Image (cartoon, rainbow, N blue to C red; front, side, top):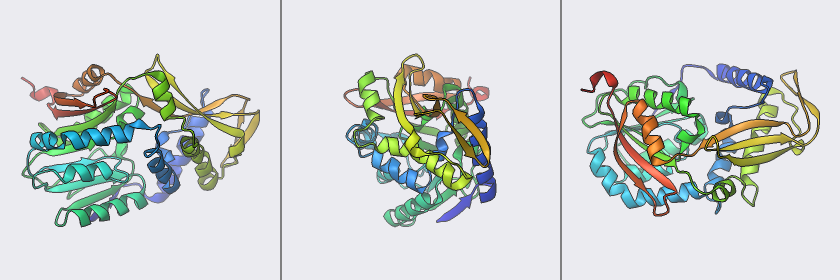
Length: 328
């Protein structure tokens, strides 16, 4: 297994976390980037969320992938190089790789080194002889793949982006990300992407407000991480988790709401909260198939095939990159 770390050293990553936190808490609507959920404990909590009865996303996508994996493998073709940004535990890519014809290479990226290294080693054991590259860092800043992940392959380059992670980005940010994926794979490269579809508000809101409080713990762990790494003074007992569907924006919003007026410090800088004031911690946009395809087309991705479950809760899209300059 070949391991890479994005160019910034650990101390720069800590400085970035501090800068993003101070900037986000200074806005009139306080906010924090959701990528900082995923320290070791946050990653484990997210794994736990994926098993909850309320959280339909993982089991629906996994069942869909199992049903159409043969069709996907046929359309991807042999000898592909699969790239998974934000790979996490890699459960879905393991299912995919098992049905591909002679894949040539697998490149995984994730912000959590511990989770990524464990997943990379497991996949090497599952697929002996398959070159596995692991890239530790924020994939949204990975504008080019590191060598030897750029080595030529006999088949096509394929970005696999499951889990509806695309929904964590605003439509403008998602468009930029899709364009970056296109630069990774090049002309006629492929994208296999999971997209959570619009459905009833009660079903959506239950998925982010589970009875066991695991999602609440996941949300609050962000404050715990700030306390631990940035000398924060958040009293977790004075903030509560709140998630709701914003129908106008077609997104789930997650917030942490201050239950009283209080002042919190981060790295010695004070931030005042009024009672009921929130920190906006995450969005999860939901799409119609047509709406997602329209956004992807604007980033030069052209649909090949779309699959969905029987209830039309979740979709998998296979697309080909055709840069505007090459389209006739």
